Length: 245
Image (cartoon, rainbow, N blue to C red; front, top):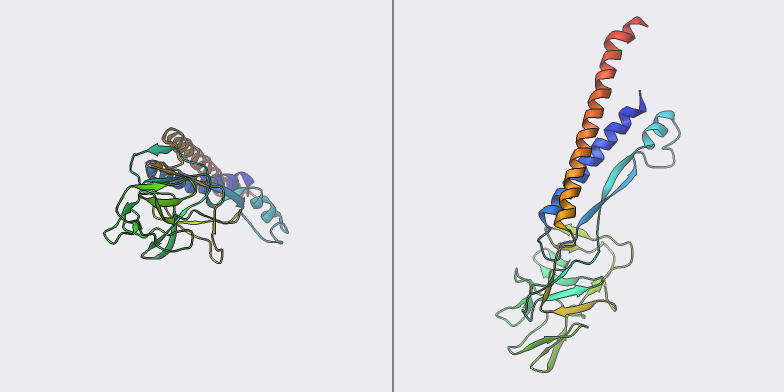
């Protein structure tokens, strides 16, 4: 069978998956703290015996989408003037307690709950550098670049910014919540800086995201047309040429 058929088939599958990713990125371009996902490719066949046959070698010459990885590039910081809006510069995540367990986010739109705790917009407690909820008494709040929280001049805690080892992949949950890698403990960042009165935008540009979506849509259509042509040629060979042999 012509290897061009495999090229068209794997190309269509990869572009279709990438199209879904591009659509999700664009849909969340206005979500604070959203981390865009970027596709990566792998060989169709895996393992030490992948190239033992001519068919395996032919198929393995073409890549399939292996999945998506989070882009950890910095998003733009938008000033809000709210003293409990916090944005992270450089790498790291806030640690929060959700109904499903510990999660990590870059969305720093926080507020003071009725019980005095620092919480997310959904009422989820935000953790300190020691992994405990943070109490914020009434008063004038000041947050230093190192995360130290002071109220009327007195220190009440330090908000945690946590990082993971290089190469560790977080799993998205919803728009801007992430699950830490299984078996990998986060550590307090020593490089990140906190900006008070600001929110980090998604690290997905609307214009670039729109262009990516259109480009991948056109590529998927191109692969579909190529696959249709190969399929037509194979049918012609099977019905007209093969009976003559």
